[in-house]
Each structure stands twice: as structure tokens, then as C-alpha cells.
Length: 364
Image 1: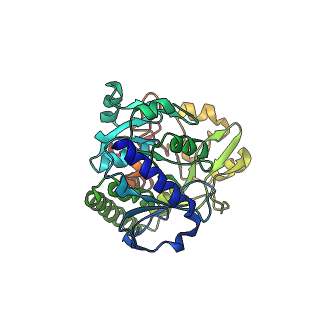
Image 2 (image 1 turned 60 degrees about the horizontal axis):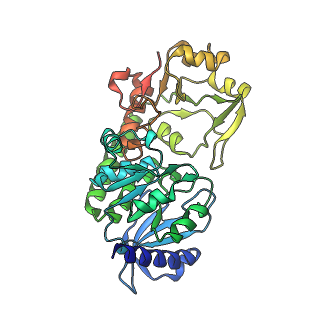
Image 3 (image 1 turned 135 degrees about the horizontal axis):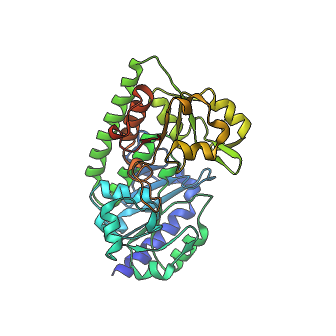
């Protein structure tokens, strides 16, 4: 029966995806309309009564692409393969972590409970990047695979999943620039798993707390200037001014120094331009895997005399990481931007020590 359900869902998904660019032709009514997320909606098909997860432009570079998934057919999934650690965090947040049977990149998982399940063989590795073990995926007898597309549609993967009659859904949380928009995808996964109320209750609390923190920072007229990142092979990549991290900084009352990038992706700049920016910075954040001032100065010796270094205002988002570089900032932080925002407010306005921060640590 499970195999028949898989085949049925695959057929439905293919039919729905094939007319994905013609969303206006579908007669639907809203079940859940996101307030911040741009990439999804939960709708009901008026003709069939089916609950549909509508995924919009779900991979980088997608324009005008709308995919519909009949999530009633999965009814709800009990065996899930998650290709992103943010998906595992969202499932955990709504009490569905025990349904995870496979992940991509076990070594990058931070959640201690999931790590124990991996060690005990309850969660298996299904491959990483483009090297997926489709035999393992098939053996896991999953009800659904949660996908994401980084550099475009993962057609080679979806074609193989279709061939194996394994249902999949694109989850585009990482494409959301708004921190609350990224977190709101927890509602989509909650609907998928049949626990819609838990997802909406959780998100409502995150939203309430995030907005309260954002309003609090307006009490201060001080807007410290912030530098981001480290050089990579003599090139410094600066995120666009409307990006996820930049919005967090601005919501915390900071000023992102590089306002020239109006695109949707990071822009490379020279070390000379980066040095001019760093000389203006009050704080320097997100320095890769750097753990000490000595490491920072060795990696970027020309930056050793900028004020942020001289006054010890360097903070990294690596407080909650594993030895294999699993990062909880990108895992549970996807669900809890309110906690990230609280860290940034403490850093930018109070120069908080490490012991009062959750995701961040002060580089000494």
C-alpha cells in the first residue's frame, strides 16, 4: 500500500509540476497565507478538496515557477529524508524529529538528539552535495524527501526519485531574505506532518518575540557600523544589502557598511576595498572558523590595526558548532531568528561577553 501511495503521489506531483508556471489556472482557496515568507502557501483545491503545498520559485534562478504538492496523499509522512539541516531543525521544533530516517551530510548535524540517532543507526546518511546514494534512499522506504535547489533545479535528483517512485517536495526556506520568512517555513512542514497547529503556535511566538526585540532597539539612536566575513583566496564576498544576515543586523539597530550590492547574491570585492570598509567598522562579525584574534590577524594581517580589532569587537557565530563544523546557527537558528536577533542586540549595543550569548562567541 505504501508503494502504491508513493506511485500515486509521484503521478500527482508530476501532473501538478507540469503546469507549475500556470498557477492562475488552478482554482484554490487559502488555508494558510504566510505573512513574511514569499516561497510557499498552503491552499485547498476547490475541485478535489486536496490540501496543496504551493512552492514558489523554489531554487536559485527560478522565475515564475510554481509547484503544487498534494500533501494529503502522504497522509502524513512517518519516514522522512531531509536534505538540509534547517529541515531537521524545523521537524524537531514541531515534535517530528523521530520521523527522520535519512539526512544529507550527517557530519554537519548539530542537534545532539539527532546525532545520537545517527550513531545508533536510526538515521542514515544518504549522500552529500551531488553524490547521493539512491539505493540507500530507496532502502529507507521514505514517505517523502525534502529537497532544496542551490544552483538551480536539481533535475538529475528529481528524475531519479521519479524513476524510483519516491515522492519529494522542494523546501525553499534558505532563499528567504526575511529572517521571519525563513522561520515561517516551519508552518509548511507542520502542515505536511499533520501538526499544523503546533507549527503556527510556534511561529506566532517567534514572530511576537522577534518584533518586540526589533522595536526595543529603536530606543537607541546609536547605529554601530558592521563589517562581515573574511577573505577567500584574496577576494572578499559581501552579501547584498537586502539579504538575510543584513536584515538581522539592521533589525538589531546596526548599519551594514556595504550598501552597493543591489543584487540577490554576494558580490566579490578586492582586499583594498574591504580594508577601506573595515577601517570604518565598529564591529566585525561572522569570521568563518576563526577562534582567536591571532588567527584573524594571520588570515588578514593588513586588517590587524582597524578599530574593530584594536578594541576587541570581533564576534563569530560559532558558539554552537561541532568538531566536524556542524553549525547550530544555520540549523536551529533558521527556526529561531529571535534568538539570533537577541544576540546581535547584545553585541552591538552592549558588547556582551560570550557567556550571555547563545549562537555568538566573542573572539579574544
